[in-house]
Image 1 (tube, rainbow, N blue to C red):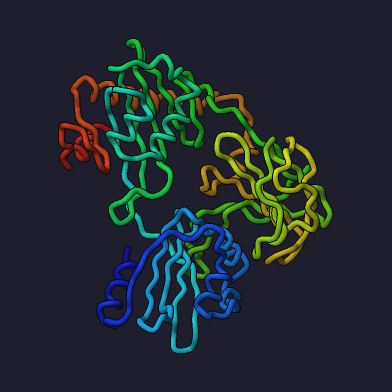
Image 2: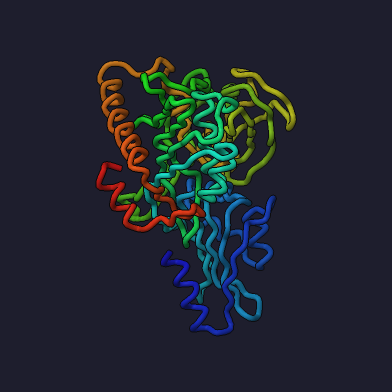
Length: 395
């Protein structure tokens, strides 16, 4: 937020400067953006290897900000990279500089409660005005309830974390608990501390796991979304997992899917992207040679390319990225664990967590409490005191 304020403040001081914001153009890469403003692409060399790779994570779905002088000279720009970081390009008396900064946002826990009029998906969009929440709720609950059996007058509850920036939700809502009460029976889904969804008995609902992208795994650099580096004193991110391997080692498709990209991506070098079910996309970077083409269907374990050191790389390795609905997530969550459900201490901790959640949801339904959401068009206005109420009872 403070970087946006800097933009506005400087525009007032300079008078002739103008601040604009728009969505990043689809297909536009950062080097082309620099050329558009007559800026040397050598500015990218000011970034280290990991930060330079982040340039390939710029998405057309995200809004960026520019400050441009009256003569058309770009003074500075903020371009989001994922949900946590942004690229800051700015002009100095000695030329342009670039750095990676954290995205400023507020995160809060919200509770949405409602009776169903048409369908869960339609009513969430209408009453909460959050399409991404409707999408996530549908994906989470489809493993637990038959939506065709849901009728008008049935009820639902969602407890979720949402990031907010400049008064608008950003990123994918993180659903903690979801529930549909249909035909006088409550169907719950819980997100546990391991990041997976379980039913009331502690059985995992989504059991689709990906295979290893290499036959032998040796991690050389783990995934990190946003971390303060204690030595460099700045934020660092690595939106994937690096596996060390010899040049020419076969790269395997982690799951069945369709190739949506096979080509060169600057910092990532030779890259293959595969689209899988449920909104997942895998990325395989720095290859020496690619074996599949765009549009080709591949099977789990099929050889799609070979390890190399193309792009910004200091040696042969595979950079393996995993994305869910365009958001980078830790690949090792999908390839590391088995799908045997919870046992022992883990299951007992889950059952205690479940008992607390169900007790709270039953209480707020019995008391007919209103939702606490970021925006609503419900007949009964939601007051800020509801936030205190929900915190007081345990959320």
